Image 1 (cartoon, rainbow, N blue to C red):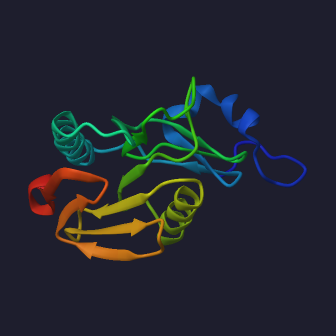
Image 2: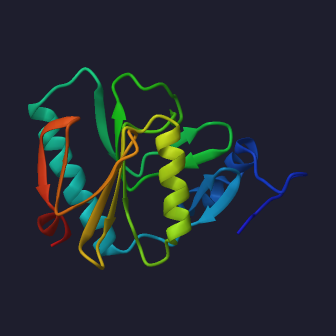
Length: 177
């Protein structure tokens, strides 16, 4: 759904920022406005468990490339996208004042019933094309997860881990409990 249109039919980031009253339910993906349903309790519980596990691992394994984990942090990506992954890990020293500039180092989406496959694929492509090293898609309904890497590989996993986070490993069943 588009709240505003331009001559090209796409929304600019400047116009997107003017939608501040609706910002908690919107993302901008390649100029297209994405309206998101409010996250449900189970969704947020999964996000918090994952965030806490990442936070604990990063506290024990300081890194020169890994920044900080966040829940629903906004990232301005290129000229026409602003995404807010459910959980993310910024790059060390990542620029940005109001929002981070560029994709997070790791973006994690907990896929809801309201998300479409095309939307998740487009988000993954944009994130990887703009600097994300990994995008994790977690599917609570099917108890599955996929990790997409900037190298072009994709892998279905039962436990979450990353070569970027040597001290981190979490069984998917524990995160989704």
